[in-house]
Structure formats: C-alpha cells, structure tokens
Length: 323
Image (cartoon, rainbow, N blue to C red; front, side, top):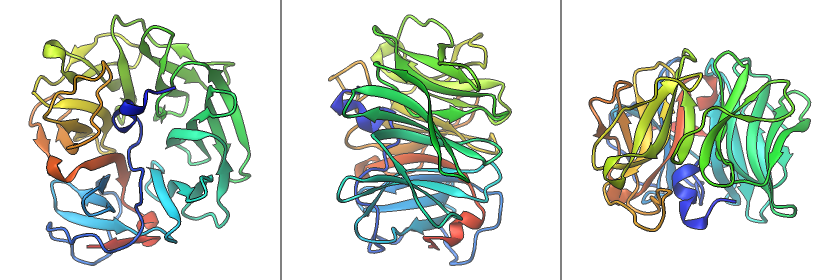
C-alpha cells in the first residue's frame, strides 16, 4: 500500500471537494463558447479555487467542472482517445466509489480505493488500479463499459500506481512494488498477470505512453536527489534522463497531440521519503518531449493537482462550463 505522504505525488491527485462553481475566475481568454474538437487540454484541480479546470496551455482557454451534487467528489478523470467520452471516478460523502461515464446514465460501482483510471483506445473498456481495504490486495481491474462488468486481471500485495493503456490496446503499464523497489510493470491483454518491464536499480513511478506507443515517460530519482523525468523505448531499452531542473517531479503525462509532457512538481525538495511527497505548494508544469522549454502552467502557491490530459470533444458539454 502506498505510504500516506506519497499519495499526492504518484496517484491521480484531484481528490477533495471539486464540486461547486464558486471558484475564482481564471484569466486566459475564456470565451464562453463550446470547445472545438481535438484540443489537447490539461485537466487539474486548483486547490485555492477548489475547482477543477480543463486548460488549453499555456492559459489560453479554460473549462470548469461542476459536480452534479454537493456530495460528489471527483477523484479522477480519463477521456477516450477520440475525445468523445470522459470517465469520472467519483466518491460520495459516504465513501462509495463509482465510475461515471459521460454518455452512460447509470454509474458503475467500484470496490476498494482506486489509484487511477484509463480508457482502452477503442473505448470499450476502462482499466483501474485499486486497493482492497478488506484483503490488503492491490488489483488491476478492467471494466466493460457497455455491460458494467468488472474483471480482475492481476493482483498482488505490493503498492500499485495508476494504469496507462497503450495506444494499440495491447498492453497496460503501471508502477508497482516488487518487494524492494517500485518498478514499471506491464500487463499484456489475455495474460494471467503483469510482468516487470525491466529491472532498474532505483524506484520508477507513473509511466505513460507516447501517443505513437513507441516510448514511455516516467519519474525516477535523478542527480542531486531530485526526481526527474526519464524516457525509454516501449521495450525498456535506451533509457535517458529528460530533465535536470530543480523542480521535483511526479506523475508525468504525455499530451494526446505529442507536443508536451505535463507533470506535477514543486520547487521545494522533500526530505521525508524516496518517493516525492509533493503534498503542498504543488504545481502543474509542462515540458517538450525532448526535455526543453520547461515551464510552470500554474502558480505553485495555489497548490494545483494534475489530473492528466483530455482531447476536447462532446464530453465538455456535460458538467463543464467555458470560462
């Protein structure tokens, strides 16, 4: 199970009250008009405003999320590859967890505590990584969107991070504990269990695919004891360090159009753990895939929590308002 101080860094960190429309207005040229399809939007929670935003970086246009009721809390979001549908991991004040899909009227109940969700490229399934509080077992689950049936395809006792589905639909990657370190694992569809992608001498966290499926970006400890972004081929070969700034990084996510990588970061280097804490003064940053042009998208003093990327599309017509 993840250590408590690490949750904000390595999991999808939109947790806490995200409903309501009383957050501060954002500057950035919001027009109030519907979004054109195909824009690569960063989704994040502005903690100071207590609001979730979808933003066309850098600060060009914003859309604001409003929960259906005051009892709903948004824990995670993932969108289909074509940008037509969104899936929301919602938690009620009574602790119940459910998966709400933008064009499906009935939510799908989820057992356990989830660390993240990801759509299959064809939009037929959603994968979740969960922790069962009763059995202390970490699981990779796959939900059939049409039927709502949930199947458990891999289990283990070690900590498990948010999943990411490969662009060709054949594999799911995530970080997990092998008993000593956090390593990158991959699950090939149809296999009995996930396998370690490669053996690294240090911890690795939150892998994500490049849009063409040829590479993975992930977070690992770099020189100076600062977590940096790393990149490697999809088979684990040719690992290289992408960044070297004084920003401690976590939760790297590749933009759908391939132009940028977003990550959660903070200037202050935490000393509590090998795993980057990033609990406060957390911001959303972007960098080009070659590691250049690193810049802050949000003010770290406002404590913004990265949710990932979504292509704009019909899902923005439900529970989102242009700013």
